[in-house]
Length: 176
Image (cartoon, rainbow, N blue to C red):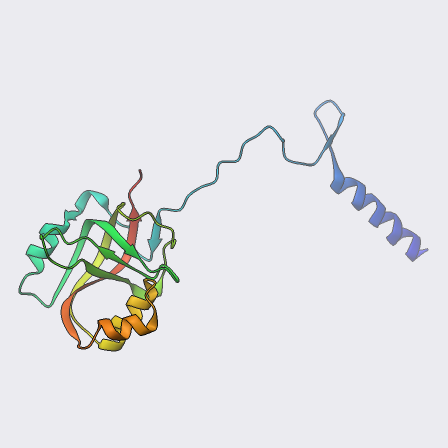
């Protein structure tokens, strides 16, 4: 008797999951409407901190305000010139000063952005600019992340450098 009740309950459950009743009692399949288009949401914000784009300064203003300091909290807007090809765990931002090297943005707590983020696109970043000593090994690691062979990276870097690095805790990619 118990086996019959269990079997009947299972059959009823199967039928109730496959169909549903419409308003007038007609049977409708329990599947999404094939004519509805589902818009895929593209994520544009990453990190622990929401970025207030209204307070963003330019990259040139960031560099001017940082000049002579060891640390500066800021929100700025900059052009992405490189993205870590392995994980999207860092980017380079265009330095507006002619002839100056682009600068590194690392992501706090190692969050990532899509590796296929379009170069030349704009991003709003919040975090802290720091005076950073970048070791030879880390410079080589970054070059390899950017796609350079280990052998070429070893030849390219022979000494540590002191530079400004931005540690971002939030990034918002600008809409195109």
